Image (cartoon, rainbow, N blue to C red; front, top):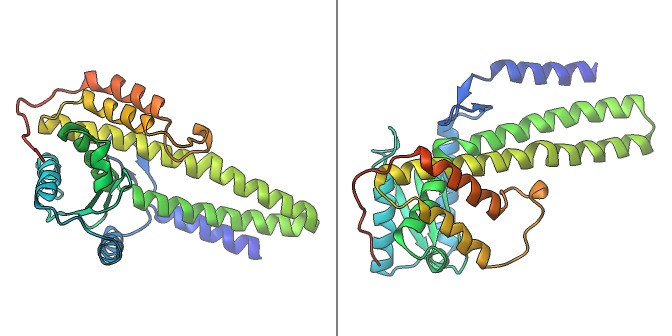
Length: 261
């Protein structure tokens, strides 16, 4: 009875999933209401602004905002006319993010690695791509479905196997879900956001070849890189190759942003 109930819940959830496509045409699993994710994104962003130091240097903020605005002007609606908030955090990490609810954060440590406006545009465009492609919705939805699947597996293992073998089966299912579903899903998101970021860069007139140079800079920063199979991100070499293969398909707009620090 318990197995039938969980299985029925799983099927009911799948039946409610609306057919959706990402901006690149990829089929998506999106179970969460967009408005709810935007509220969550806003809450997380406000909390970060309260807990992290903020860079108040006017020139730095104007530079980052200039790059972000150049990209935002190229976005599809409703993103183009949305009231995006951009915050520069005083942190040495070479990182940036964008959250649902039109929130962009850039750590000023990134400006040491992204050495010009084009490289910074590659990062910000990539992060905006995550928002527009609703990757956070997909991640939450996939975790929900994996959780339901593991519940079904646990019931089967509990009713059909002894306790020792049931524990082994559940451990294997957990590893399989992580390596076989969730991590590749993350790598798919990263690669898709790279392409979307390049689309926005091209429409804004940024130099596309600088996106590959950015990842060379990142790789030169060093640090331990896990095997690509066990990583949520593509390896830098794979990323650079994919970027260089995609660039010839794009036409760069006949304009040149002029964002300077």
